View 1 (cartoon, rainbow, N blue to C red):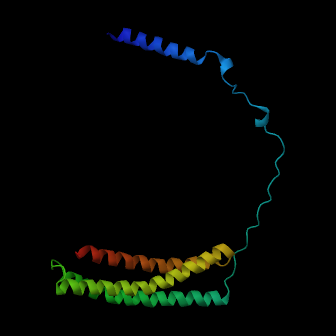
View 2 (view 1 turned 60 degrees about the vertical axis):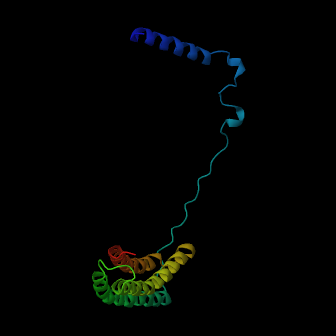
View 3 (view 1 turned 180 degrees about the vertical axis):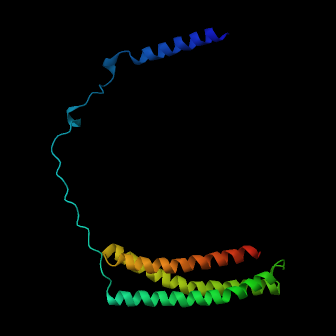
Length: 171
């Protein structure tokens, strides 16, 4: 079969199918808009909500935020002071067998870093709680967010260090 005859067969087939679609229109419902589908009535303009003025944090909140940031900072400093020792332990365990003394010492050093990080994460969780409360009930959201972001940056640094150390030790 050549191309011309194939094209003719396709054209005749498509023409026949198209004709079937235009057949007896009395058997199918009309696609015209029905009375129930017509839009009626009027719309009322919605009054815009008042945007609350930025709230000044209470002295209690400022004190609590400073306390949480201080706790997180102490935990972060303890973590950063312990990190070089953990780094040395992991380096010493490089190539050591699983459950060997060097491997076990490296695992304990990493676990101590994770414990130090948990103190920072407790402060971060409390900041998250304050942030959620401020979002739901209104409050000094931006002040809380600033404190939370500072502590979150510390947590990210610690997470990266732990992940790097864990990636270097097998088991």
